[in-house]
Image (cartoon, rainbow, N blue to C red; front, side, top):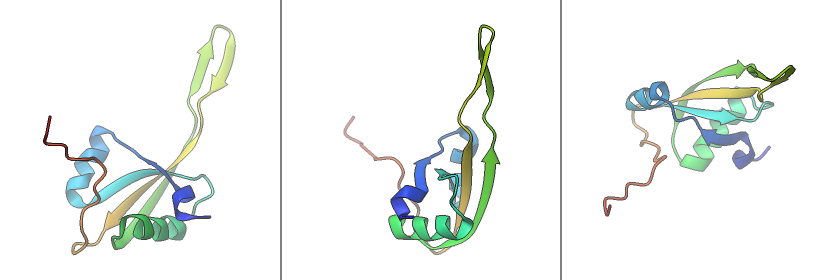
Length: 98
């Protein structure tokens, strides 16, 4: 699996934004991705040094429409901890022109 196929998108929540201060970044990753693949992909794409990777599997939530029951997509979330000497990952563009 290529690096761009492993990392799907960053997770932007209040808790994940608070973790960025401690160099902990949260990403949605491919369902088949392992910790080693996530580590290598983050190091390759962002050019940083990864110390630790924690992975969570999230079940799909039950959603109903009338009497019909369906589920949202399940997903896999990775929390990546960077080393103290590595640079921060720029997830957002800093446009100070606005």
